[in-house]
Image 1 (spheres, helix red, strand yellow):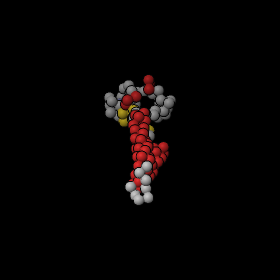
Image 2 (cartoon, rainbow, N blue to C red):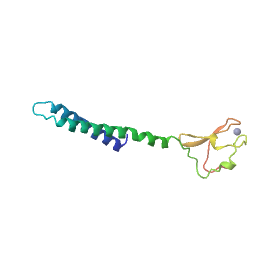
Image 3 (cartoon, helix red, strand yellow):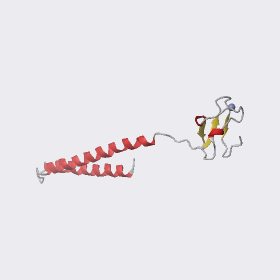
Image 4 (cartoon, helix red, strand yellow):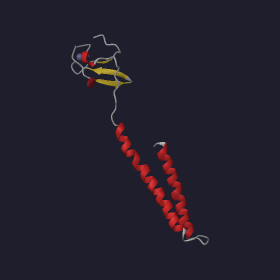
Length: 120
Ligand SMILES: [Zn+2]
């Protein structure tokens, strides 16, 4: 939950609280029936605020779905070959384990860490 959404919920809560107080107070002896529309409008603004605060993040979340795998820039994948069997390796054989790029060879099953400067 971001700060803007939190503020919107707090403001909406205050508006609804006072709106209900206005409607409630209108029925009291010292109250006036003209408070009822004021209360309804105040509650309505609060509900609209909650409506907009609740629907905003649904669209924003979709941009963060893809997980990026960071590969050191100087590793050239074109010449990447397995250190054990010499089989050609593709980017999908590289996975990030504990923040380091690790290669799993699909041919011989060897798993080893990628070095920043490949010697092959
Ligand atoms: Zn291999």
